[in-house]
Length: 264
Image (cartoon, rainbow, N blue to C red; front, side, top):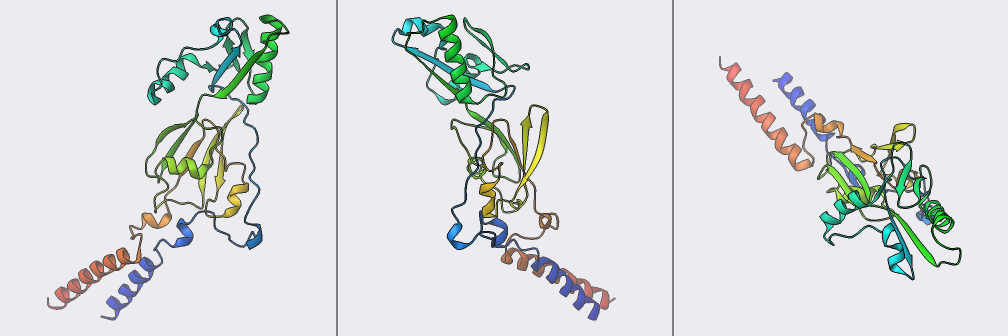
């Protein structure tokens, strides 16, 4: 009986320590690294530099619309799904050499350039090769959607595209159904693409200093991986009530086994 008692105590202790607490699920907590008066932290967001396989939307405008018609893709539909496919077929994809094929101008190298730098470059080439210096043209350059992948302990894994210039990692995760209670918010992995390959970065989303991380704002082609908490592998419940239910079931089995073996 004494052995049974200590087994029950051990099971109870393990399951109680397996509860998921508020510290595990609350985003951007002040963990003492910031004072109460300095919770407005500085957000770091460097201009994005274009990578291989990015798709650019480039639009040229002038007083004479017919004159610039050759540069602008035709919009097939306003629906979300068809506009995305339209951007794929009519947008300007950065090839493996970092170039885009632009009408009349030919190949333009954009690898490693910011959107603002590409805009200036296209305007300069248009005025040099096609328009007169006095022509009043206006060029807009945008990324054709911010495409990223989310996998792991989230509400909905998959590949997502947001038509925004800036998206932080919490917004990206919310768009994917948020992190599940069994997901590890303290060590979220961001796999980022660079000209020399891919690199894995770590970010703690339970700490307010995450807003100062260079990985707080996602970039096109980022992969966000949310690992499961170690306690999930134990099969323990997520709340105290679930743990109590589990403990009661285990105790009932142990007590029944004890009395059955005792009566033999």
